[in-house]
Length: 303
Image (cartoon, rainbow, N blue to C red; front, side, top):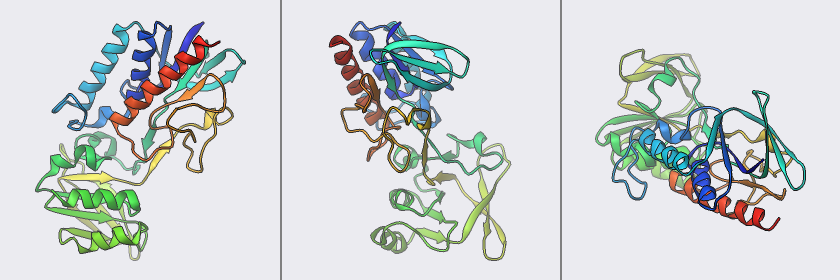
């Protein structure tokens, strides 16, 4: 029996483990893939307090080292269900194991939607990025593409246009779908080019990222775009369905909880990018992890 089982070992989960262990709670971290979450795809992080510049994987390594140093147990397993037994919870994994705990913190994160093209995975973090705030500065005075036409995509395009030589926005629909005010800004920027009715059909099979092939939907005409980098802003996809019975989800599938990270189920807490929130950055995920861990500790102490 653990005091707290944490589902997901990204920045939120690792921070929760550190705080819970410092409160002398027995903690188990369950991670299905790689420790560190989405941050490991960023070649450099320059907006996290205390580090002028650090690689995403380097920052993740430090968080993992600290959590393990505090005495947290870890297992590489995929959580498929959580059973509410009242005063305890049982966390079930795809590998067939069941872990009992007094409280559970779900830090399942949210993954960026990918284009689903050949060679895409090879260049993620090294030519293909999902965050202009995180990685835009690395493309100063360079030409980048940006896939998407909604609010988030247009905001990213505007941000990139402040430092990039040229930004090419690629939208599969025949119009942009972001707010009119954002569209006006985009179309007024001389270094932003908008290609509507266009899809990315291929990624150059080269040693380093050099560009993409795009296809015009109307007539299937293709052209090669030479790019220094590509930003993909076609949405995020939370993976919270397995826990929908215990915590309310919003229309987009995120946990509909407040800043207290508390759910409708006593003893179940959520933190990080899987939670409905306005800003998804490493700093906000870490903040969530601390809040959820302290809330879980108070819950256990009051049992």
